[in-house]
Length: 313
Image 1 (spheres, rainbow, N blue to C red):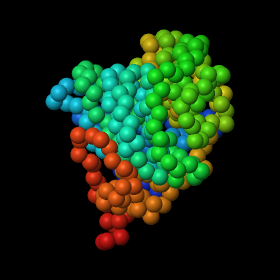
Image 2 (tube, helix red, strand yellow):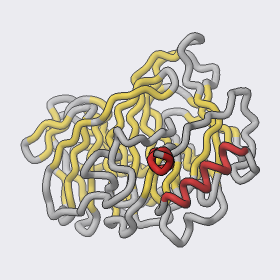
Image 3 (tube, one colour):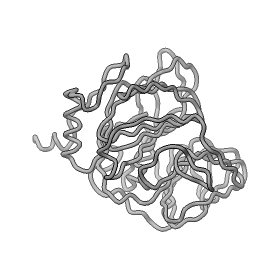
């Protein structure tokens, strides 16, 4: 589910958290709701706003989708980021201002690149039943964040059999298996199906990493990590050795520490308040910057950014 990022999640302007040598920080997710679906927001958090270029992680569900309780999130804007959507159960219909219309199902990837501006909706597909998954944002670097928007769907992603686990390479590369998804920065996103016992996963030591548990419990460095928690692992690790008493599923995110301090508010990722203000004025005015989504749902609006209100006081 897309955003919104608010001051309750993290300081909007400022440092993104210093990458540290091998460590273990367990951070609690903030529980909220997007549409009719409960979400647990693992990123951004106060003191840990990014992991590599990953700047947002919402674990959505599990939720029961019915005619009365649907997924519908109307058209809304994005700048300066990529959305990465992965489901473990259910279906979502993606529509965007590029004309894309794509149902995503478990094991598939929807990746939308916002660049200078895109809008999209997330809608019920007619599916009824359990819905669960994760949506992530990747901050775009200076070289691409002002570029053209794009959308891609990948139904088949490579898998790697590891000692005690199977990894699906959603984004990036692992052990010679490379995802077809576009990357604007050096980062990786893996879904780990960890079998009961102890597993072993090779890591790139120059990356910082974190683990978001989706189902079950995973023990890392003697600490149990459960759904609703993010385990920040720092840099300098060349191996992760998770242990479980029963099968578990987790998302491993990693990447080179992101050099730029980013500003996140609502559904925008930028660098300055002026950038965010300009994007938000365009969206509120419906001036064409974000195109149009062929959706039956109403466009979503937001009040002015908090710094704009402060300036008026």
